[in-house]
Image (tube, rainbow, N blue to C red; front, side):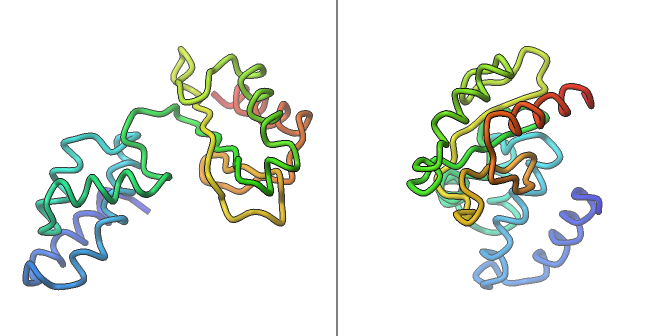
Length: 161
C-alpha cells in the first residue's frame, strides 16, 4: 500500500472533522508512521505536519513521537535491527547479541553505517519474550536469536543491498 496515498486519504477525512474530534488524536501514530516510511524518520517538518492535520500542538506530537520507540526522530539506516534488551531477553543473551551485531556490521549502536544500509538499536521490550532473545529486523520479529543466526541475517542484508 502507498503510505503517501493513505496519508492523503486520512488527511482529507480528518479535515472534515471538528478540531476536537477524538479521531484526530487517534490518527497521530498512523500519520507519523506514514511520514517515517516515506522519509526514513519523522523530522521536525513532519511533526509540524502531523500537528497541523490533527489539531494537536507540536509539543503534543513530539511527546507522542518520543514515547513510541518505533518512531525515529533521527535518520536511521535502510535496515534497522532492534535488539530487545529487556530482562527476559537480557537473561537469554541479548547483551552478547548487541555486541555481536556491532562487530559483524561494523556499526555502533544508534549510528548508521557509512553506506546508509544499517542501524542497530537496543529496544526496551518488544513483547517477544517467548522468542528470547528476540529482535525486530525492519519491523519483522526474529528469534530466538543466537550469534550465528544474527550473523546470517546481517550477511543476507548485505547481499541484498
